[in-house]
Amino acid sequence: MRIPFPERVPIFPAIVFALVLCSLQQLEGTTLIFSACTFGFIVVATLAFNVVGGLTRPSGGYIAAYTLLAVLIGISYKVLIGEPGQSNLQQPELTIEVYLGAITAMGAAAYLSRRFVLNKPLIRQFKSNADMGRAALSCSVIGIFANVYLAARTSTAEAGSLLSALEQLNAFLIIGIVAGMIYEIRRSGGRRSLNLVTMLACILTFVLGVITYSKQGIFTAFVCWILAVASQRYKVSLLQIGSLILAAGFISYYLVPYSQYGRSFRIEGGSFSENLKINILLLSNLDKVRTAFKEQNDDLYTGTDFSRYYNEPQGLADRLQMITPDDLIVNYTAHGGVFGLEPTIFGFENLIPHFIWHDKPIIGFGNVYAHEIGMISDETDTTTGISFSPAGEAFHQAKWAGIFILLPILLFFYFLIVDSVCGDTRSSPFSLLVMIGALHSAPEGGVGEIIRGPTVEIMGLILLSSLVIYLMPLIANLILGPVKADYEAPTTYT
Image 1 (cartoon, rainbow, N blue to C red):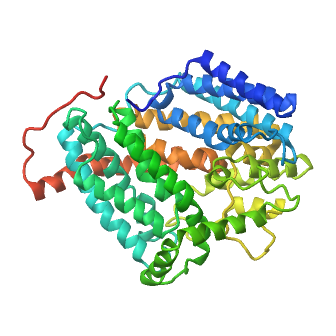
Image 2 (spheres, helix red, strand yellow):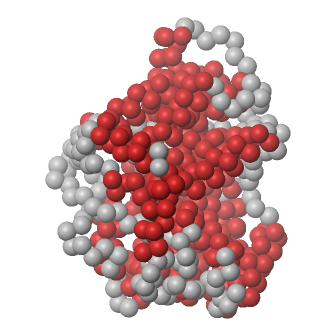
Image 3 (cartoon, one colour):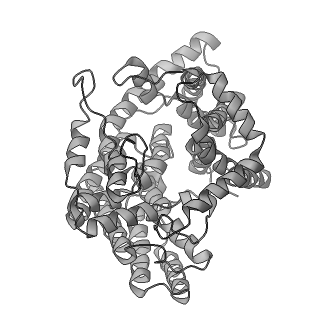
């Protein structure tokens, strides 16, 4: 079978799904307004996804990631466990109305941006499949050494330093993985998706995610593989599907609790060996770690502080929705706690590099908002990062003006620039890289990531793509010698 990589979602099945979901909500006691807005959200999200060309464009990946990871998975799982959609929320109807307004703004931005997106992307493509393979090899090797060095260092990078720049541009490993997979699929005529170097890069990404307690790092290699093989219409075997399901089950059951529970034991500034001992201790007692995390999570689910969406802890499902924090900030805003547009203004000011603005402040507005709404009570805590979706933050900044004026303007430029620069995700590993980043930034990056995406991050991607396309194949050629005849397969397989 082939993993779906839809250019569009048929509107009729989407409407049927929305009707079934909302009918089940009504049977479980969800309010009519909440269900009606849920229906509208699904239909508008489908239209917005289709108008940009689905997953063939980075903007479609952004829309899909926001729809699923911020809202729809949470609401659907709520139905699955038999709980009313509005339970455990302070402002359920207003929160779902904010989501409906935000996806409408997103759809309007998507529709308008289509009229101006360049037909030919600004980022050049590889001259040949062989060049892509050589570039993937160089990127993987450089990325492996760079990531090992960054993981082993004991000090944090100073803002504006060369090390800080390396951290921000350090996407060589991911590019190596994605480009290596695409190359291997094309070179083998669709018979293989991995080679030895790419497999080593995937293993390293997974290991680094485990030792740094990063769920994103743990899942990255699997997400890269799914997107790469889906974009190339690679035929997946039953063994691969079974292995993927088993890996997902193990990660969800053991490693997600491990990453949440273990990060509190990490010694900041400690040596690599000191932290590795802690990793080994926790990994050798995964059942105990899971039990300890569950007890810790149960404590958060007591009382009436509305700090959860489900009646009981649901493990990974708790992390696959932004309804809980968004509801808290929407409720605070509804009672007069409008923040203003300072975070958006600072988002643009923050584009000035450190070598020009030497004393540029570092402000985590998620942390600021969390203090406002009572999620963080320790006044000295200025580092804990709390995430909100773009909808929640836009509403907090300017209420409905934030949803219907601020969001569509920012998203219009985001979709226009990112799609014009990157082009089709089926032919460009750099476009897939943007989509992978959107899995994090779209649901929980707030307004700030909409500003950074088409500016700092896209300029970094242009620089990175130039190095990868023109320099990386030359480095590999110097080591391996001239390119021999290479199988040039079609772009996709049908």
